[in-house]
Image (cartoon, rainbow, N blue to C red; front, side):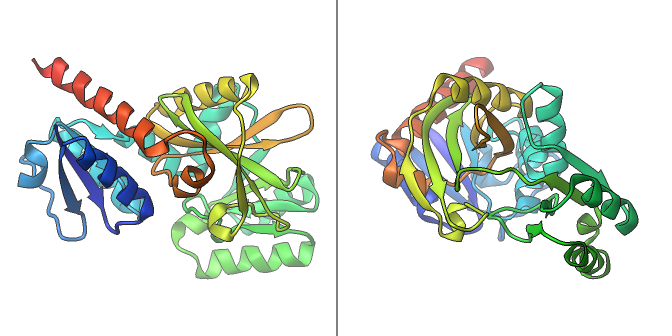
Length: 288
C-alpha cells in the first residue's frame, strides 16, 4: 500500500509508525505540511496515489484544515476532519460527551470576565480554567482564590488570542493523584496507562510517571462511547477516577503514544498499523 503521513515534525511517535509501516513493506510518503500547497480540486502529487493518509500534524490549525483538503480529494484520512474539529475544541468536545450521556466534569462557558467570574464563584474554589484550543496541559490554571481568578481573566481578555476570550471553566475533580489515558482504534482499546504526579496536572508531557493499567469493563464501555461521540478513529481517551466511577474529560485526535508504548504489554505501533491497514483495505474495496 501507499501510505501518506502528514507531519510538521517527526517525533518518536511518528518514527515508531514509520518503522512499523516500512517493515511491512508499505510505500510510505512523508508529507511536510510546512512546504506543501493544497489546492481546491487537484491533490498534491504526494497525496494523489495514496491509499490512506495519516494526520500527524503537531499544530491543531494545520491538522483541522489539511484533513479537510485531503477529504476533498477523496483520499481516506485518519483522523477525519470532523473528528479533528470536535476533538480540537474543548467546548465542542464537552458538548458531544454530555450529549452522549458520558460522565464528564461540570463545565460552563462564558464570553465576558463578569460572566466568567460568576461561573467561578458558583463552582467555588478551586476550579479550573482552560483554553478551548491547546494540548499538553498548556495555559491551564487551577484557580484557588478570587484574586487569582480576577488576574487570570484580565490577562486572558487583554493579551489572549480571540479563542482565549472564550472562558471555558470546569469544576475541579479530586482524583487520586493520577489520570488514565486509553489509546483506542474506533473505540477498541489498544492499551492504557495511568499518569501519576504530585502536581494537579498529570500529563506525561508535564513529567508525570506512567505505568501500565488494565482496561476494566467500565473503562471499555466509556472509551467505546466517547470514541463514537467524536466520530471514531485513532484516539486518546482521558479519564479520571472519582471514587466509584470514571469521568471522561477529553478525547484527543492526534494522540501521542510513545510514553504508553514504553509501559504497555501490547505492541502499540504494531496494533495501530494493523488497524490502519484494515482501514486502507476497506477504502480500496469501496472504490472498486
